[in-house]
Structures are given as structure tokens and as C-alpha cells.
Length: 314
Image (cartoon, rainbow, N blue to C red; front, side):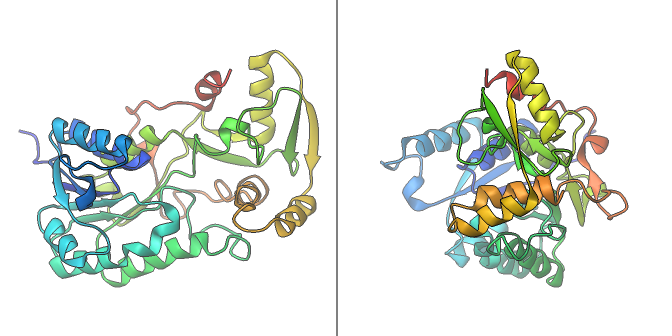
């Protein structure tokens, strides 16, 4: 007989990743609860039709909708009491908004696992703390609070979503891949990792009742999704059957451009520097760092490779 599936609360369930998480949770037969604001109930006349459509879809699929928000600690306590696992998928820049949720989880005391809103590079291993306007330090602050409170956790480090930077072939300021000339940062050999958000959701949901991922960092570095800039450009040239003019941008030149460009307009370049100059996605070994690698734990899970994603850009 199958082990009983954990009951899951998803916060941020109408966002891009959160919606996939809720869908995958339901498809995996987890009793699924989604926290939504009063203004976004199924019956409300919200001015955001896309969000309303998502809420209706989740409700129809069997999700239990709970009224509340991160600003309402009482609603958080009532929601957390009903589940075993909490997943937060709010935007990265709102990381510190999870503090009331952590207080609620601590107060209720029944949560078997908390997955905070990370879903990017490992904030404890990035090497750009002087540049990133506290983007990663906020996530590290949340980690330390979770650990201090003794809350069981899994941190998901999927590195970059394919919808960010990859559509431009890592060309800051562009929306589509170049067909004439391309900038390559550094020597072009440092590797980054890209994951499709729906695949990140599938790996995340697989961890929920898995003791191997409890109090661990789950890193995603799937074969076929770890590319250097030189490899990206080679793959794109092969697909469009054309050689591009390559403009190499040194570390010094990129840093100069970052410092000359005001925040937040320089964030794309900061991420490029982090990934393809400093190597923040790949400079460390996952196992020796105490983490676990998702594709080794769940080899059965299918995922979109970078090559397949580039085909959609043709």
C-alpha cells in the first residue's frame, strides 16, 4: 500500500512557478492547498483575468483555496495548521516577506518540511555580494532564520530559469537571440545552468516525502542544461546555419559597464557576471558541499534541454 502523501500548502500559487508547483502537487496526488488573497477568490471580479483563470483551474483540479496573505499572520497560522509541507514561491525580491510565515510555521510546530522561495543560484555560494544589491543575502538571511528556528527544510537551487537571459542567448537588453553578432563574456568557457520552470516544479514536488532531501540543498544541474557561452553560441549557429561575429567582453569591461549602469537596469549584467565570469552555478562540487543533485535522485524525470529550448526560438 502506498505511503500517505503529505498535505501541501503553496504560497504564490498564481505566479509562474507557483502555478506549476500547484499543478504538479495535484497531479502527484498530494492534498493541495493554495493561499490566495481575498481579492482573488474564485467568485471575485478581479481585474487580473489571468490570475483568476489560474485560480479557477486549480480549484477545478481539486485544490483547496485558503484566504490569506503573508501580511496576515493569523491567516498564515490557520493555513499552516492544515498541512504537512509548506512551499513558498513568491518573487525573489520579496524574500524577506517570508519572516511572518516562518514565525507561523514555528508557532504551529507541525510542519515536516518548508521549501522557501529560492529557486535560483545557491545564495550561500555566490561570489558577488558587493554587486548584487543584497539580492542573495536576503535569501541567506531567510535560510539562517529557518535553521535557527529548527524548521525542517529543503532548499531548491535550480540556477536560472530558461525564460530569463536564454531567449536572448545571454545578451543583456535583447529579447530575441542575435543573428549577426554576439557578445561573449570572459573567455566564454565558464558554464551556467538553465532550467524550465515546469521542470523545476516537478523536481521540487518529488522531494516532498523523500528523506534524502530533508535538511538538504537540492541542486539541479541536468546533463544537457549546463552550457558555457561558447557552447550556447555554437549550438545557436548550428541551428540557424550561420556563423556570428563574436565580440569578447572582458571581466573588466563588464564590471565597468555594471558600475556605469544604474540599479535595477544593471541586474542582467550582474547575473551574467555571476554566472559566466565567476562561475557561481558550477564552481563547486554538489556532493562534497553537502548537497544533493536532483537528476541523480530522480533519473526518471524528463526535462527540457537547452537544445530543445533553442529550437523554440527559431
